Image 1: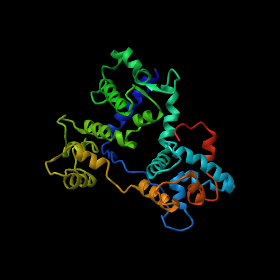
Image 2: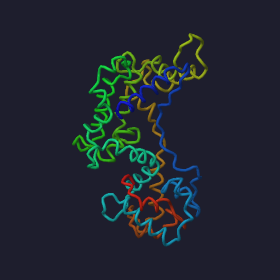
Image 3: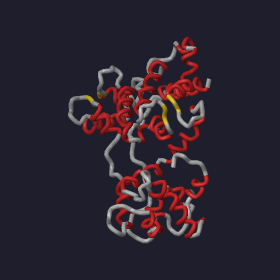
Image 4: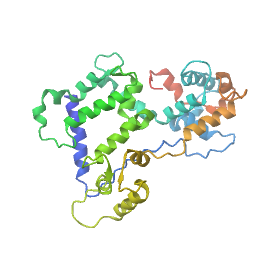
Length: 320
């Protein structure tokens, strides 16, 4: 019954959204902001702290002594060193910074994990997810005959299965926490971006021709119910479609153009910050950091104060 309630809630939200006369839907996915602090090469290191630890954690720096901060930083370094070779590369540091910035995603997964891991093996199989989400529907399909085509279970189930398989990198039809996070939040993972683009196309492409024309693009944001004039923002969006969405000027968007629209190639703040931290702390200039080099420059990473990661380290946070 839990699955029934979950999907009905999705349908209800969708139906409510459809009743608004002017609906602006935000589909563009931007990289999370690392910090509002200016990134200046000074001794405050505030930007670095917020990028490395997260904004909320950076606010609690004054809880520990320098010795305690270094000890906890050492434990964080062990987590960043994903291949356990004793060296922190720019790529590993970038991956850590990105995880910190989307920590809310992992916390969301942690909250729902037990709802789907029915056999408690710390993995969620496709069958477990399907049973938890669609079990009631599969057992009682006659109760759902009136569901609209766009939000029907018949379309949602295979779409979820396709997304689940895309997130399942080792192809064992069982998702660990990272894979399940990619399934629930595909926009946050590079290898899931094709799925995000495809689902966006399917949502908007009303005539199923594999493209999004201007009217379909507008209809995704604006329900023209009263027959009156279009608001100014809709006229602006039509101009946006012509000038910036339809790159090859053929009157429609293909998947590449949709990707360019919903996933703009912004400046990679995490990459820049990782390079900065490595450059400033790399004493032997081998373009990698050892734990000793990081601890030697500990004030750049965590300052003279503490972080909620001390709290995290005492909790069983598999996601970080």
